[in-house]
Amino acid sequence: MSAPAFLMCPPDYYEIAYEINPWMSVRRAVDKAKAERQWTDFYELLTQNLKVKVELLKPVAGLPDLVFTANGGLVRKRIFIRSNFRHKERKGEAVYFEKWFRKKEYIIKTVEQPLCFEGEGDALFMGQELYTGFHFRSDVQAHDTISGYLRTSYFALELTDKRFYHLDTCFAPLNETTALVYLAAFEAYAQLILLENIPDPVRVSEDEALRFACNAVVVGKNVVIPSGCPETTKELEKRGFRVYALDFSEFIKAGGAAKCLVLRI
Ligand code: ARG
Image (cartoon, rainbow, N blue to C red):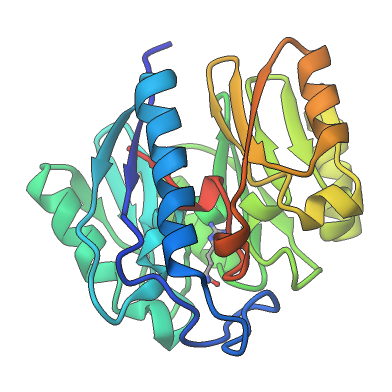
């Protein structure tokens, strides 16, 4: 398998300026220096230790959540499907993602308004299988459109707990057989789909799911997860993964951690 490449955006303008999920409170400010450090530690781990190619999107004043590049769209081969953000606070991000991918000569696809789609935050591949999350941020009809573009079927999973508003907050495919999953965040039928189709689901506890254990980034046999998730770490190590636990406290204040900060390109 070829080494992955990611798109990231430095946190120059990152702050809690509004509240669009239960994690965010404008009264709980980000420690800017700490956020900068946490982002840089993660960036350096990816680029230096794990030899991942990381491209950078230029930060834009007034778009604090642009750091969460996972929500910009979904990339498969040379196709970029641009997001339609649910909240007006993030809608302005879309043109910056589109510009970046256009410049890199990707084939650009869009989802018809008013359907919402928040990119890799709600659409994850496990091998060739596409899993999508809908309800809070993305509309299931948007997933019909994207599966058409990608000529693939998909498993649509309804999210039911507003603390886990994106699929990547409660589900992380690690390879073709293993995935981290916090089952209670899914509607009953979605839970069945996951359990029936995933050969080796690692069931994450509520405690660790609330510490964003499922917001993991996998690079081969290496997994980056937020610190404070010892049970998940143990389960991953049992399966031969090397776990890198990093502090994402400042990003969790906005409802995101490792996975939200990268978009696979
Ligand atoms: N504050 C951002 C939002 O609510 C956080 C996005 C987290 N991204 C993710 N892929 N889960 O939209």
